[in-house]
Amino acid sequence: MKKNIFQFESTGELISHLSKNDKIVGIVEYGTRQMNDMSNGGDYDLSIFIDGFVSTNINGVHFHIASIPVDCMILDITEIEKDKPANQMMLAHIDSRILYDKNGRVKKGIEKIREKWEKIGKLEDWEINFYRFFFKHTIDKIGKRLNENPMFSNYSISLAEISLLDAYERINQLEPGKPRKVIEYIFNNNKKLYRLIECIQNGNSISCRYDALVEASETVLEKYNGVWKDDEMIFHLKYNGKNDSNEQEKIIHEIFEIRNK
Image (cartoon, rainbow, N blue to C red; front, side, top):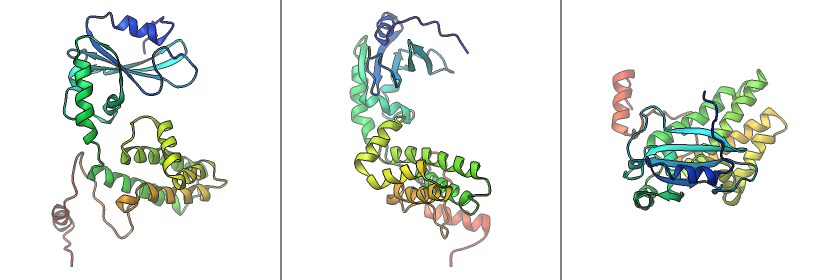
């Protein structure tokens, strides 16, 4: 842990300072807060682009400017010159706002990812399988013993609620890492799901919260046949793995020595 030595009075003062650093080729901001907005509530998201790696171990830093928490990525400029994002969080740069661009590479990079990356992001087989498994797993784990350990049951339901928002964000290709925007989107586009999430949060009993979780899970995964069914086998896939029925039959036959009749 390092002590915060930054003494800037505003985020604008921070950006001005950074833009004088010869090592930095670009700065962008994203999210709802814009430079020089020092109002209470929320954080400030920005990325600093370097021409070449600064560290193989660090890609960002968190600190406060006045009372504002700052989430700052430190990235090689080539990360926004690739055809595919390195991870889901990089997708936030599609809607970023350029604050400093030393030689025009940031503008070109943002234009490229707006063209290329928006076409990427549909839910992959490995993600679908995971979501369908995860929610059913939680439902099964606590369903028949809700009141044996009420604190654990409530805890598990609350964790699943967070994962529901993450899954909904991913399925609907919303901006990653912005739960407030996800909730707003649900309110505007899926009133049934919004009411179910309210029930998960505010239900007057564990069973009420549990029933809302079951229905909300099915609703979020509706286009993918809902959660994992009792009469269905589901396969854990490696990252970027695909559902291949022939391969699955081979696994069942060679490992479990059972063939479909």
